Image 1 (cartoon, rainbow, N blue to C red):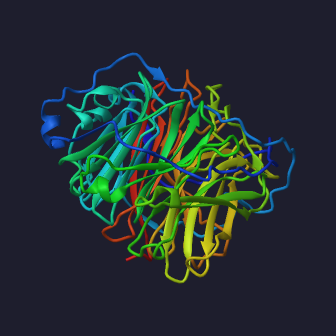
Image 2 (image 1 turned 60 degrees about the vertical axis):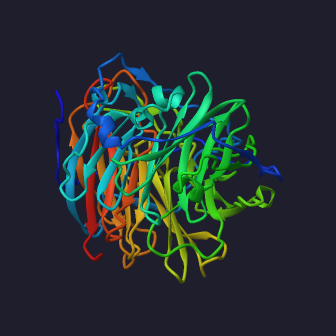
Amino acid sequence: MKRRCMAGISLSLGVCWLLLVVPAFAGAKSPEPTVTYPDKFMVSQPLSEILKTTPPIQHQAWREKAEHKPPSPVTKIYNLPDPVIQESSGAQPELSVAIGFNFDGPDGDESGNVIPPDTNGAVGDKQYFMITNFAFQIFDKTTGKAETQPALIHTIWNGFGGQCGTEDGGDPVVLFDHIANVWLIEQLEYFSSYQICVAVSQTDDATGKWNLYAYTFSGGLTDYPKLGIWPDAYYLSFNFFGAGYGEPCAWDRNAMIAGKKNPALICFSPNNEDSSFLPADLDGSTAPPNGAPNHYVDLGYSNTAINEWDFHVDFKDPKKSTFKGPNVITVPAYTQVCFEDCIPQPDDGTLLEALGDRLMFRNAYRNFGDHEALVFSHTVAPGNGSKAVTAERWYEMRSTPSGGTFSMYQGGTYQNKNDNYWMGSLAMDKNGDIAFGFSVDNATHLDPSIWLTGRVPTDPENKLESHLLVKKCTQIQNGSTRWGDYSSVSVDPSDDCTMWYTQEYSDGGFNWQSHVVSFKFNGCQ
């Protein structure tokens, strides 16, 4: 059966106990970057025309993608007190949002039968583009109606040839570049060589033509790529298994938008201490300070630190590019939770993965003029008072004044006495309202569901409002521990208020169901 879920308001949620944590050492960065050019370039036919002759996705045997865990310099610390716990079942203001659309996207069977789905999406001028491992679907943002049927991602590279044109490696990301009003998509490939396929649309219509590229990497798997849009570049990160771990890169954004054949990709060598970098992704109409670097973040070398790095790229003279850091941002102590199978489901369901070793997509950036802000989250062990396994730690980092050094402004550990929270994503609207979506379940009575919380600037610092049910589901996932590996909140560039969140829930067995919800804080106009 499908779509056995209900929308409404929730009453309870949850979080966890303690496991492992931190200390370590800082990483040295290569003083000179490497420069890579695409193996191939092509301008696509209009995607709308390609889809007219593209057959529906056929059912095939389920394929499970393993997430590679980078070796971590973290040591175990047990029973470390968390000083910023917020119990979600306590007294909080009602979440001050109005729900717009609340609908299902494609499920796993309609998306190439791969698990996990890695649901993410972006909202543009006219459309909402949803993407999962192997597949995408485009919706009209004013009606919520599908403009396309689900199609495999490599369909965008139709006629391109090679892996990009014939295979789907997954770990996709889609973003809308609201500065240039174009779409940006990537996915990795690993069947015959290690590649990242990247596409930039020629207009704000995702069903139009795209500039298509393929970049090849030697020496290892370019795993878990993430993207961020910045005025001077498209910033990329991935875990380079075989050649190190976290690798930061920057694409020549202007050349890609113009449809040039050889946009440079400038990268700094990976090292063994850093992994799962998140580049900053620009929201809002105010650009970063002139010449400002992109701000990458990853988990720090202790359980009281987040690392922030500054990437300045120079495409005219690549040797002048720099990747400096870390700026070690002190945060309240947390206890790192499991990477692998530890989140229980009801009815003795399969234990689910938490991916507690990394920050969750996106690293959402906004410039308010008098200060800059970054918001992001990660899954942690809950503190005292909870029997759950996982909780959500969230942050707002600020640079005051703009162009200064980032430090922690506020944040906390959102937990529940019994419910598990994980796989979160944050974004901030033009008023400074913060939206926070995540997965939730309970070991005895709540199947993995989708929830929202958030805050407005007048709320007490470090505190979130009450939670809101997006989808309460009645199916557990069995047969695979994989969940995620990420979700995303995006902000509508038209009003800079409306948020769109995409996440998964279980449709039973291996099958997952993607879901989209739009909403707006009541005070944002």
